[in-house]
Amino acid sequence: MRQVFSGAQVFDGSQLHDDLALIVEDGLIVGVQTGLRGDVVLDGGVLAPAFVDLQVNGGGGIMLDGQADAGRIAAICATHILLGCAGVLPTLITDTPKATAQVIQAGIEAAQANVPGFLGLHLEGPHLDPRRKGAHDAALIRPMGSDDLAILLAAAQKLPVLMVTLAPCSVSLDQVRALVKAGVLVSLGHSECSYDEAMAYIAAGAGCATHLFNAMAPMAARAPGLAGAVLDSDLPAGLIADGIHVAPAVLRLAMAARPDGLFLVSDCMAFAGTDHTEMVLGGRRIRRDAGRLTLEDCTLAGADLRLDKALSVMVQDARLAPEKALAMVTSTPAKLIGMGGSLGHLAPDRRADLVHLNRDWQLSQIWWGGVAL
Image (cartoon, rainbow, N blue to C red; front, top):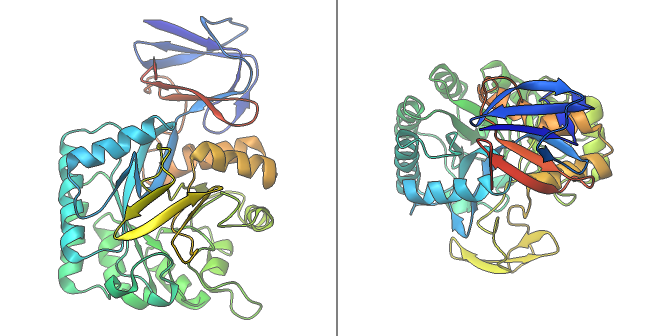
């Protein structure tokens, strides 16, 4: 089946184009052509590659936890496909060794089953800094032992992507080197570390930072910390752009310092894709109100965010150029996980996983392999 999409600007992964029609045949992108009116005529807005989200704690009422199996991972991924994602990294927050092992096995089974939208796993902890625990359970945070390292090294050989968030105080430089050598994407986060410590871990191979500014020591004139190291280097880093976790003014400052390499994550919980206003997750009651997820003591508990909303915050509140913001949810995260050759761009012979965003940057339509959802 041949489809021609017209009537919207086309974002190809790096640039926005006017008066281009996108041609799709049998679910694959064929190319673009100027001055062509399509059979799928869009009412303005932007036609873009489907999103890539590297931090998804859950969705559809399901949290990634010790109950995980390939079916639950598939359900989480399916939820995010319906929220405009081509693929996601389901993310386990700090948990027990047993839960971590269960999630890794479930991820391996999901990869073997070619679960749609499953790109790999993100393990956010348990090797973090308890001083910067955020919403994680401090009782479960612990240093990385030899058994932990062995499990991660083995998992990296069986998963398409394994991203691990850790803090320097809980992991040695030698452990980081071993992880990186095995193909693990090491991300620094939930840390009180100094600028110099962060730079040492970057030199050892850490390739990312997790939710910039959040669960990090604040920057100060004489103590730039991890956030300062990110802004003073070329280390990629995720951002939670909901207007709550990071103020728009700080988003603008971050983008001024780092016009390239930062990307957007939802950090969403099981609420994503549901209309629930309250859930019990990990034995804790979490409320959803006005774009916030909070524990009973009003502490933030993850994010209540979709990537189209994050995109709109970057364009409308942080005043970022649309091309830059679009790259932050498509080509930039795809490149970071080594999938820039298949995700994040509209190019010939790639799957037609597409989203249409209206003039307010809201998700309007989704196509999965050229099929409207």
